[in-house]
Length: 541
Image (cartoon, rainbow, N blue to C red; front, side, top):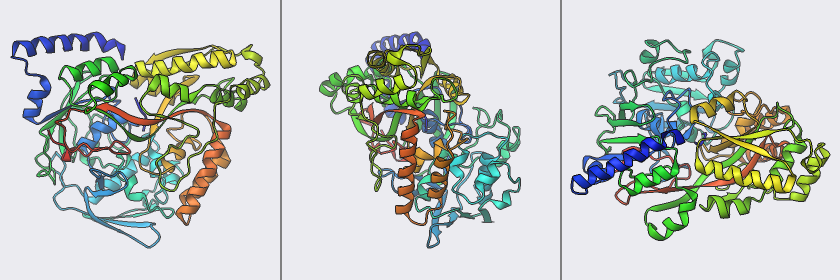
């Protein structure tokens, strides 16, 4: 999933000032205190979501909200992202080689419009996600299902050729194109979430990208919370869903998600008692917060890669030597020590550390001399004649500081000058997907704990590729991995694919994430998670 504007800074600053004044007038009670009494969790969410349709979004800000509103067959485990937890499916079984899975749906799962959640809802939703006319960027996530890729490619319009069979209202059978023992963990991702067929059909139909079904007044979900308020660029609030099958477990009465992409503003809101959780922390504040708020500053493992995409359809980034020169000509250790400061690790490959059984690549290392040599061989000795280029970032002071550091090191080591410009989240995503950039800031958090979640997206035409890069050999390695007979064989093929990616380098690996944020001590049931996926029904104040 994609990781995530100063325009709203003045408004938020005013809100903070007014909040402080009101608190003083009411005897010092803070918003977090009132919310804790009311059972309302206040979360900084980074950016305004692109939308809340699980088939049409790709980012982390969207995931945090959607996962409160919709539940899939398998749910997030409260403490371990490697373990499945029952969701709409109360039980499941598989054949000996993990190619056929059968799910038994619970009888008391309901949509917020009163419809029962049935097996055909999942078949409808997956057909919708795979329909070429919808243009879902995450459709390739479903390619592990037999026949899904051919259907999405338009080779057939007969969905019965896809390995999804509705046995009855409460039983669903899924046939995969190869052994996939980690399939349950894939099902936790929102690309596999169901949507309510009646709501979609009443608002434009299966393939209408402009459908209004996921707006405030028409949203239909089946999760532990219901959509209550949505004020663009200000707040999204969800309230407890009394018809959720496991409502007795839900402890919170609601959650407010605040889109705050100015890190200093978010940190001030936390300190002033307006947030229980921040999305991140200004890097410059980390040393001070370690001393002053050691029990509230959290620095945890996080399965993600921070990198730059390169638009290989534009010169000079169509030249692998230029791309290689950019990748080796800045000091990543210096960057994480002095700029990000949150315990991040220099990325020597693309797939991050922390995946059982997969050895992290050490291919990309800092070597300014090699970078100068490669750039010279590409026709730009000492940077002479290098075309004007810019780094696109989504609006964030931390992304700008990283870009400025890399900009300075490229200038010193390669003799090239690149500019930096920012766009708000939605515009930035559109620019990236339409290849309207030279170099683009990017982040990818694992959708499940497996290297395939990082490597599948660089196959030809993948909706999350966004570089213009295509390599038939790479596609073949990934395709063979999907049908490998053993996990050992699969991981070996994926290692080969990653090394090919790191030779061609349509990306610039920068660092591997840690999860750095502030948490109010009153927030309970919020456990360190490798993917940072927190099932809200277990969270309390």
